[in-house]
Amino acid sequence: MTFDVPAGHCKGQFDAVLLSTDLEPDDAVAIKALAPRLKGVPLMVIVGEGDTDGKPQMISELLAQYGIADGATVLQGRRSTTPYPASALMSYRGTAAAPAVSKAEIAEVSSAAHLTSAVDSFLLKHSAPFALLLKPPHELNGVSSGALARTVAAVYGSFNFVAYRAALREDTPALSEDEALTRQEELMHAFSRCLWIERSVSVGRDATLDPSEVCTSAWAPLSMDSSVVRLITAWNEVSLKRFSQSVSDIGREMVAAFESSGTDGKTDGKTDAFGKVEALSENASKKVMMINSIAKFRGQQLPLADPLVVASLLDTVGTLAPFERKCKAGHDQKGKPTFNPEPHSSVATLFAKSDDQPKLYAAALAVLASALSPAGNAKLPE
Image (cartoon, rainbow, N blue to C red; front, side, top):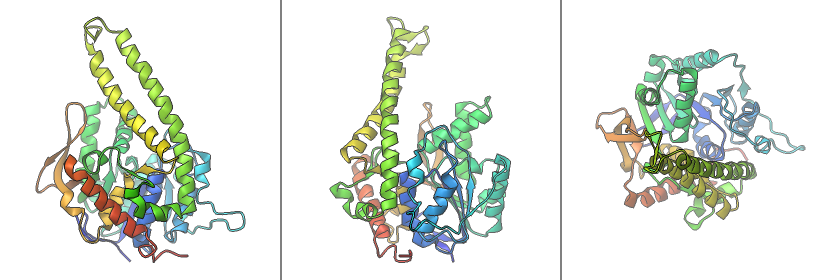
């Protein structure tokens, strides 16, 4: 069996899949949509982020529910300090009368080097591996150039890349932010081909999957999956509290920026307090939009992030492919990503001008609706 990508930059047939996930709700939806195409395909799953040890068991139960646990290997990757709700860990547990049973193997990981070696061996073992990276790609650090060069990848950036760079600098304190950005970009270009997805330049920074009229067809099958609903609800309850606290903290940072500045808005004659507040306000704006969306839909929504990556891989008629732009992965002086066109690049991104973003958004939702529908999931067990 192979995992087939019918169109676009990642088009091809792949004999194994490396999947990395932090098991947030958008990851679960992405995996659910992709599951029928992964049936029988060798699968290595790295779970990470969060402050819990329970994710390997949770992903093994998720894989079992969606019919892709047989032959899958699960490994624990790098954790973080971000709280992961205990109730979310139970989302795929089943009931006391019918507990979840998974044939996925949860392998022991003794060290980061052990994990790197396992990933390297998995990619080298297969002739045409695919990497679906839905969390910070820590597990690729140290993987051989030969293993990466034979691998086609699809990756969601945004906060995943922020966390990836923070980990790089934590491990190597002498590494500057600019150097970490360069390392991140070099990783993408090390793959045979890489599709790099960012919401901000494709469907819009705040695009979500939710019960609104525009998302009805894609949301309806999710609302009937009690496991997904439990995960979404548990995650959004914690997120709402975390984002609210973050906005409060940002407000205090804004005040402090001017309390320590002179009348010219300079801090110690060097730091531009207005510039600092500008950056803080952009961060606060993102958090407020998230809070508003979660509250508006009573906790039943998720970012169109990881599902957008999967939509690009499931697009059988090529409606998303025209939005792909081959580019050189880069960054500007503020550290924000740049996507300068480069016709022969191995890296591509989904890119739409602001007027075209609603069209791409609608196209992605249509692909997801088809994949999540009962017909699209016909290969899944009852």
